[in-house]
Length: 373
Ligand SMILES: *Cc1c(COP(=O)(O)O)cnc(C)c1O
Picture 1 (tube, protein in one colour):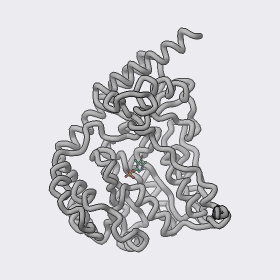
Picture 2 (cartoon, protein in one colour):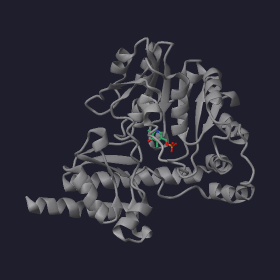
Picture 3 (cartoon, rainbow, N blue to C red):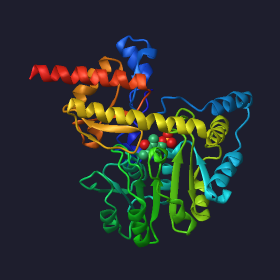
Picture 4 (tube, rainbow, N blue to C red):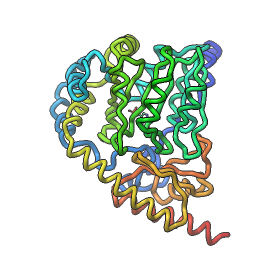
């Protein structure tokens, strides 16, 4: 007998969730285009084109012998290493399956019907998604005309119902930053009942890098979130961490599942932290190739938003069309309709070779559009 639909019994707010749309995977694109996956260039998810650090790869190989055993649920080695690196106590650190899990854990601890989360309009799409998941209200604050977070407006938006404010620095998808003085000013005025979460997934690419740990160390209700997915090149393994007060860390530990970071993720992340050379190479590549994109956009007469991340938003006209045309040429970019920016594409900075492919595809596609006019 066919069962009846169970949907009416699911949370109403869960039924309404619009799923997160990730960058199009290489395998799927290769199957659709009947292309060799090796010929496809994916510049859609801000991954590290140099791969993982060789030290992390060695650690993974060594640890692969032990995957029949459960991981250390407390991620002791990784958390001690992070604690030492940042000069904090191990009790202040929570490891997660990517920093998106830490975002979810934080939302899980304090969001529910009647509560609010404040974030900038142009920041990570996970925040509104989490509000839907927990039945909370997402309060979106317009970015400033230069596309950066409007921290003053965010302050004004805080209400007694506000539980979390997210500051994405640099922010995805636009790549802008808020600097120390503005952050200090914000943190001096933010009410105590609010947790301020600094989502610093792209902080390694930024220069200068504001110090947000100081707020945690002063005992403010702040959380600094980092990931191994971007500059460290471990997106597939899922590893990230939060540094916060012992009190907030304690809450996050209560909410997480007992083995939330895998054994391979733990050892690879710990090894990646030590590989400063790989990190420097990765950041250096992004900076120099970013300059090349900017020069080429100028030559092509395309406007773009100057970015401190490993990605750049460029204005191409009909974003969806240019995205599909580039896709046909084996170059996966990220359309921005979901963000309400249909004229833009987001390009993750790849290797010099990948970027050449991307720029050639863009010039071709935009050149054709020019001839049709
Ligand atoms: C990529 C990203 C993250 C984290 O991704 P994980 O792979 O889950 O660590 C967090 N915040 C922003 C803004 C990102 O772009």
